Amino acid sequence: SGKDDHAFLVSNWPSSGGLTNPRWKVRVPEPLSRTHQSMAVSPDGRYIAAGSTSGTCFLWDWTSGEDNLVRVFKAHYRPVTCVSFDKGDGATLFTAGEDGVVNAWCLLDLVDQDCPFGSALHPFQTWSEHHLSVTSLCVLPGSGCGSTRLVSSSLDRNLIIMELGCSDGNFELGGNSGARTLARICLPSGVQSVISDSSSGHLYAAASDGNIYCVALTEHAIQKSLNGLGTS
Image (cartoon, rainbow, N blue to C red; front, side, top):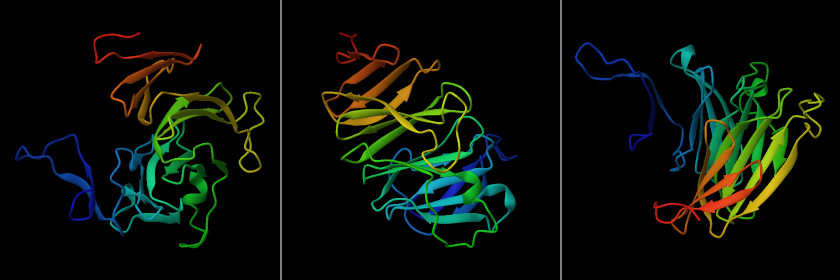
């Protein structure tokens, strides 16, 4: 999004004139959060989600034409900092905010045409593990049977590893959803961003002290980069 309050979907294919033109353009109802994870695209490429400074989230189906705002819903009490879809079938949308909360939303509920536009929606799972703003979300493969693992980072110095869906297959939307907190890892400084490697065996957390910390998920070993010159 830019200063003209539009969101764009840009094609990889340039036009005949050599310029890349947007395939889709929409005016956002209000300013989006200025964070690196304030927008996300579903795995099938159909839905685009975005979070705003008011705590509101927007969901578009960009394939349905011009009037494609599917849902507007209040996701957090403070500005939304992160939105992310699960990496499987995209059935879950995760949101996080400056309120320190991580929410899980059922995509089917959000796109349900029988649910009146503007009606109150509620997440089917909420984690309140952080006491400062959540800065990043990293979605990992789960332990099987449709589960998803999620890592959140925060200015409170913590990485929280969560799992949605039971490994024994007793996962149901609603209730406790088979959700649990797997681990809390405290780093020496506030965390600005967290990513994983391709095997999801290691997390890399960029901290406010200028270091990048490597966390081995199998043994919770933490290594700190030394100004990019190595680890200790």
